[in-house]
Length: 231
Image 1 (cartoon, one colour):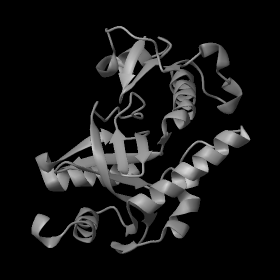
Image 2 (spheres, one colour; image 1 turned 180 degrees about the vertical axis):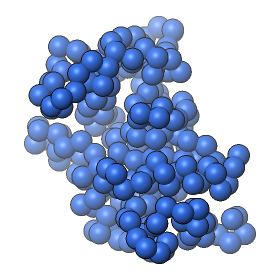
Image 3 (cartoon, one colour; image 1 turned 30 degrees about the vertical axis):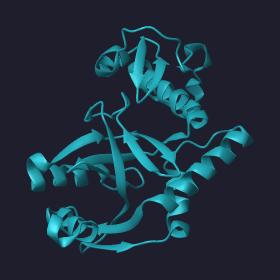
Image 4 (cartoon, one colour; image 1 turned 90 degrees about the vertical axis):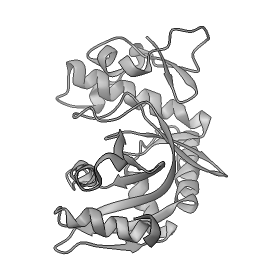
């Protein structure tokens, strides 16, 4: 299948449920692919216990996002929403509640908020700013859309008894951000990944959000990020 993700043509193997996942991204025009995902390069040993459609989803995603490095792009394991034309990323270790928090945003702010990607958005990182793109790798809930939105803020979620949010420095954010993207085996690719993560952390607002997953958490995040006149 030939898909268009952001401004890149991507050849994706039509295996498992990828044809359905890629439906919104299918490309019928002409052109040579910028990225080719080759099923012959899949490594099932990366995912013990996974098979079938789940394995195809994970492996195709790994190969796509690793090849993004040559286009100043990377994946951040996160849930990404758009509100009033700006993107906001929420990242954390698995099980912390990324998807729950962005669901609270949709419930609290209604039509002002929509999902970009609930699992693996594509971030294009340039000196002038970061853009968030939807991708077919949207996670188990398949929440997202084929769109591009400038990134305004990135929040690292932590469980807490009370909802509070604080700015953090790039140095504080770097270890978590590195954990939430793919770590290439190739040393040169790892250097590229580190450079992109460092540039990301220096380009957007960074926060740590302690939250207990009640609706107030969305309001606390909103108040910290937005100017009062734009709440």
